[in-house]
Image (cartoon, rainbow, N blue to C red; front, top):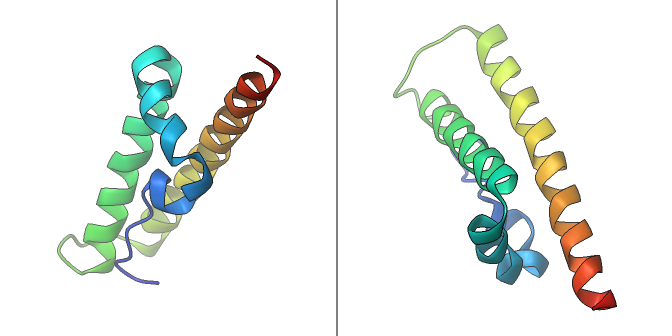
Length: 86
């Protein structure tokens, strides 16, 4: 949907409790999380016509966001599995 927020806790509610833990304990997760949310904010601004840009640029941003979402999901899943083992 246009203008819809795609924040990580909303996208992966099953990992909501892990997001804060990883932000506090993983510099890599924190960096990717911040980059993801920056892209999400920029895309939302474009979709709401607050910011104008080319369709190509907007699509490239969306591809980057999907890639980062996949990386964040993988990190959340791996951390969750480690917690289950411990």
